[in-house]
Length: 263
Length: 351
Image 1 (cartoon, rainbow over the protein chains, first blue to last red):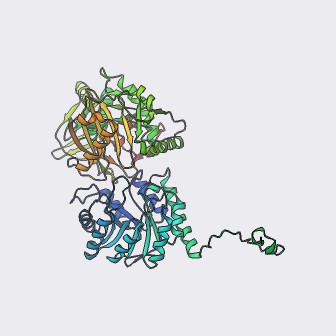
Image 2: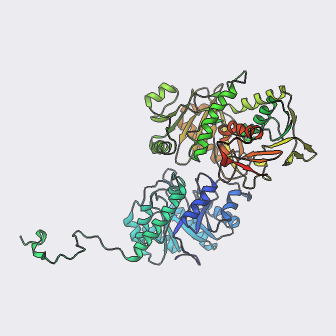
């Protein structure tokens, strides 16, 4: 079970709601993905305008809504957006996103930590979109984040996990924290890889929304996440240089092997 | 036969025109008969079945039929300069060329025999001397409609044919045989609900998708065909109009907000346009506009048929691409109701 705040979820796949060909396909994709948490953006909306068909549609789905602060470039903007989101969607959850570079959409980790610190004091459950930098993650944990969402690769790039070493290290250093790979996932195998590293969940949007068949892709990701997680729980064998025959070869004593021959 | 038409945007005008040609007595109702509040007035009028195929295969099928229908319709006008069908160009920045590959992959997967050609720096120049880009796709079946010119010409044709205009009225409901305004109720043999975003009593899943558009006067730019820029985040097209005017569009925001264009959208649209052609630097901004596209849950059009009423909606961002096909579907419903529609999924019988 995936635990965030004081809630638990069967599904370990979080899905974004942007860029789908239509709201109808979005709905079908959400069903096919079996996700229980969907993100929603407040970007480009006029403050105060609460009458929004698309938001009402998302609210009507049997999923937890996770508003994000996409498009914010400073801590202050993100804090304001988070407060708007709390009012609009009646939730203290916030996917905290503070962008530092427009081309890569890389998080500005300095502003991110500032915003996280303030929002936690204001009673938010902060899910920060961060880089895989260990020290940045330590700072976020320090100010009270119970969930970390490091990127796999830049948002929408579909490049998969750029730095699996650092992601594995985060798992090792924060064994009790909820870790979610957010952004950069392009293929179901990327999601499975993140889960095999012991991550608690993955969050993605473009890979499903822009697929030729979003509904089919949503199902593919659901299966990949389940499969990766089960692989992790089952205990992966360690890779080794030397072949280990799965059928014991009793007629080949080890001294016959070339590699073990004394020179 | 007497027809009442609620909503005098593109769809309402086309229906009115067709019926008056068939000898019907036609009355149009709108808050603004000049059509300046209609989605069509703001639209760039792209006819882009290839570039817009991504939504559903039906949009491509209807779009291809529409391109042919517009050509037939244009023959009935003295001035048919509103229709331009010299193809369109799709391009991307060098770092985003994979978007062009992705578009080609989609075209090849979804369209049986896609008709497109790849352009390099030189062949782009042969086609559009004023355009500089390393790689592009040429879609020779596409084009654009000068939306405002067509709306005006339709108004003139209708007036000449004796259509009646109920201007500056607010339609409160459209029911079989009856159009009600805040003042009065009017009876007709048939009524047509073409109100777009105003028609939520006939379309429960109707929503508005905000679009923002900028018009530029750019004498330094010489582009004759619609140009679409593929970008990871922005959706941009540049559609040329006569006298060095270019329509730059369009944002797509899930909102029914009709307030003025935002700074963010302005920055995005203008910087993207400038990146396609540096001649836009000294262009003059002659207009900014925001309008609402009426869309249904599946982003597809829908026709509701009841005895005495036909309601059409959900043209979304495909108004000019779909309108003539919806028009022929509607006349089919009126005159050959036994005919099997080529698009049965979009017609809802409510008898």
